[in-house]
Amino acid sequence: MFSHIMVGANDVQKSKVFYDATLGALGYEPAVMDDKGRCFYLSKSGVFAITKPIDGEAACHGNGSTIGFSADNAAAADAWHAAGLASGGTACEDPPGVREGTTGKIYLAYLRDPDGNKLCALHRLSSD
Image (cartoon, rainbow, N blue to C red):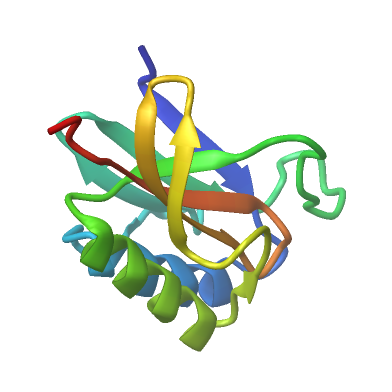
């Protein structure tokens, strides 16, 4: 459904450190930088990117927005969360753990990136 997601950052290099760590914990390669100073994380399922806002205004988070990253298992979600905390992110929501959702049990871990964007690592638990 999505081709890419791009978030604004006030300090792209600081955000790159954060996302290299968190996405690296999920198995993704470090970002590729382009000649305009933007970061791109490339995968078979889409692109996640970071940029300074092109309108020259400060980057800010979207109130009510959450960007979710798939995790292969709960341990990967925990590693993502720990990497984020160690790389300039802040914890938000409840601690990582199992939640009962409308589609079954899921394992969730939440963070805010250095610019306040709300992020989640999600692993869907089997119904067995």
